[in-house]
Length: 86
Image (cartoon, rainbow, N blue to C red; front, side, top):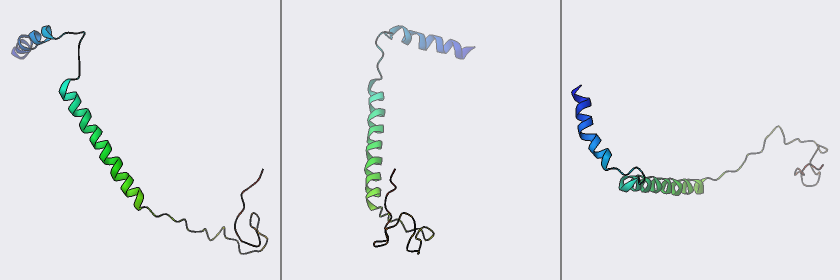
């Protein structure tokens, strides 16, 4: 009971001073937004650095590299696959 009495006597006068038509996030909201923006910027910078280090070369599939001369989709002269048409 004493807690609710303390809340009503201390918080209600503050609520009367608050203009209900003009509520802004204030300085704390700006600081939180700025910290989050800096964190995202740092993460993007780190991701770009790590992605620059990636060297990906796909290894050929041994099952798909048919050793026959007349395999479908390959040119007999070069052995490279041609794109499907149609």
